[in-house]
Length: 258
Image (cartoon, rainbow, N blue to C red):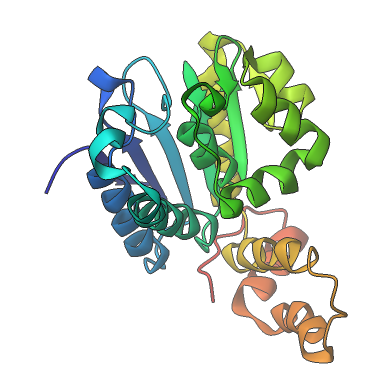
């Protein structure tokens, strides 16, 4: 299997590295398929507490690999098939039950930005750059991907990003709510590690419930009684008892996800 997406595990964290540094981690179809496969495998691993997404070399990801567009995305049917591969990978990332964190440095543009916004948290180095300059090549972002962008930054800002096609700095990205926080370049690893530790130390069942219901709350349908009850059901878990007991004893809890 290609090593364009590399996975390493340590201390409850799976680090997924986009590993095509000679192309600034621009994603080709094979890389999209591998990312899809990796994220679906990690979703089933109940020993994990968090997933970190990062890029190798000088960038997070500089978009999709345009070099293959003339062959792999030539015409409406091919474009739809190509988009289907991308959407499957992005959906696997968005729907991962474990918290996901993007560590962003260098270019985070086009499809790279789409990967980042599917993550729960986005921690960016001050020198990183953002944008979706696809209007320069006559490409339209598919509806599924636009929906994720609009959900994050609202329609007016999404249109600004798509219509102008500018590449902008991390400060502007933070102001647009594209990233969670911006830190000095030299602090990126330390701040990312601190965020991962805070997540890993938390109760995994709480994380899963919060991920599920922050998304459910975007649905205008009224909550069903069983959905309301689902959150209270956590009070019957071992993790809940562990957390309360550790708090009262002034000890650090050791959650097991049960």
